[in-house]
Length: 103
Image 1: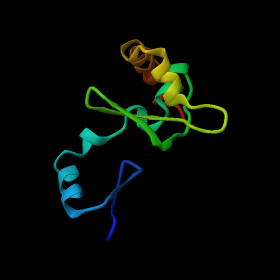
Image 2 (image 1 turned 60 degrees about the horizontal axis):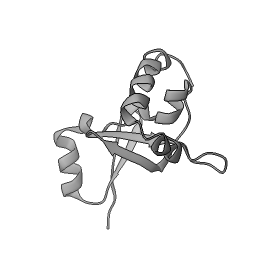
Image 3 (image 1 turned 180 degrees about the horizontal axis):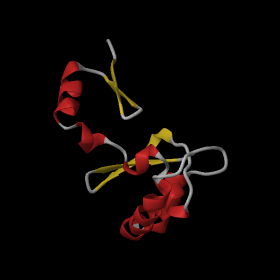
């Protein structure tokens, strides 16, 4: 099986079929991760963290990525807070500043 790839806004996307890529091509912005692809919990906390692409949540049609390493499972921290709306509101405010900084 040939894997199709696309680089959009410095993010690599991988597709397992031509049909999957065609669906993406119809509306690529629908699939862009929130917060520039940085960890949602990190943005909530006020910092940009690299992510583990296997740690994600799709909520309200949006794609959120999370840090995962030997010390922190940020996705689990987000889930345990049980307040997606509240966390998202703080993260959105923080992102207005962080989106203009270099990591």
